[in-house]
Length: 571
Image 1 (cartoon, rainbow, N blue to C red):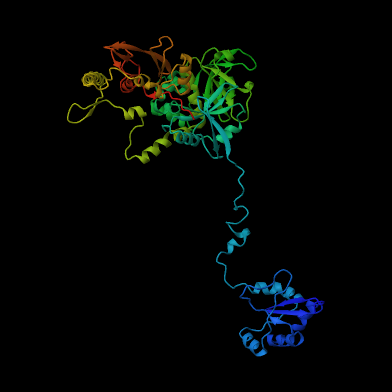
Image 2: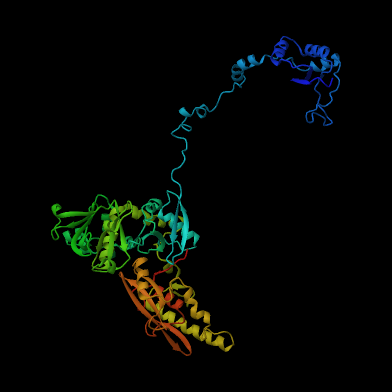
């Protein structure tokens, strides 16, 4: 009848229709007493003749929208009973009884398999999942720093909290394809204060940046003098500044000198006169000072070392030593050899700095090197030895660490059946001159045959030296001094530049015994060919590259060989 509403009650594998609404809970309670599925089917078949079992439709028909698909007629009781015997009868309980028994049935239905890892199910008793051992969200987020090269170009680097200054230098060396010779440093530069220092290799970068002002920055630069005092300690520590040498009136061996600084049980002491700027004034006062492991002291009564006459100026643990870059005019310093002791924690103002000034460069280097050794001790030696040990493990032989120029360039004699190394500089110089004459004769014969001759250099040969790292073009004398001082005043540190007085000449700037010297390279013309010479034409070279390579092997008229090129790397 279309006027009747069709109500569908879904049971397992059955559809029921009724003319009126039926109480589902009452119907389920009534059906719970039935013993088999056949009786359910028989009862439903007599009362509801339109009911039929739910069959799977193979032709894709089914329920579409709100209309019911036509249902096939119910099969006979015999056929239905035959098919239903394949499954076991199922009792349908009331909804309330199912809800009451749900909590009891569900645990009993779990498989009875022993847990092989019970500690993983109880975080309180587990060493892995206990609250103290669970991984906590890290509070140390990687910081972002910007490192500048000497030409002013900056590079952004993501620095984790445990990244050291050496790690940052290694990363920049790898990214810029530089030569890793353990001479690169990360420099802490304060432009407003006019201070800078090289971070130690083991120092963490993030805490250092946290104490820097917004206008301060990091620089990536060479520093050849970083560990030079381990190779030549006597050049860094004059005997007149060592307290134990003055007390014993005897010189100290080189090995014993370093052991006194590295051994925490010993009591080394540096003493001497220093100028100190008075607080709040522009005047300087000359005082006799002592540098010990406990700090920097000044004597209030002449050169007295009695405890009642000593005044503590700075503690080593909470301070760092800086080089002053602004010059003597800004602070009205009595000499050019200034340095400063700055507190390491927090941002420091100018009035909190201890401005000091030494008599000469050797004294300043001694004070600053002793400050580093007394503060960090054995850590500096470990930083110095760690890259050497890594290189030794890679190579199958052990050799003393030398500069790249000494390892790659050596004077050889191939006149015999086997080659030999020429150790005598005089013999090496004569061999170089003889080889040069032979090369000129060979080039003249080639020129006769019509080939290009090196006696008539091309424009490329006249400017090829400008591609070298040690050539810095038209820079002033003061700029060359600044670059040498920044990269460490060690013997053999050099650069070449254009001469300001002679447009056709060049100047070699060389550091020797912590003093900077300048040598003019003059051009000479011979048989239509231009040569360059440092010794007024006694030794001539066709270009500056040959000149530098020769003096890297032979000292000649120079006070020392050319060892370390003063380079500027662009990031």
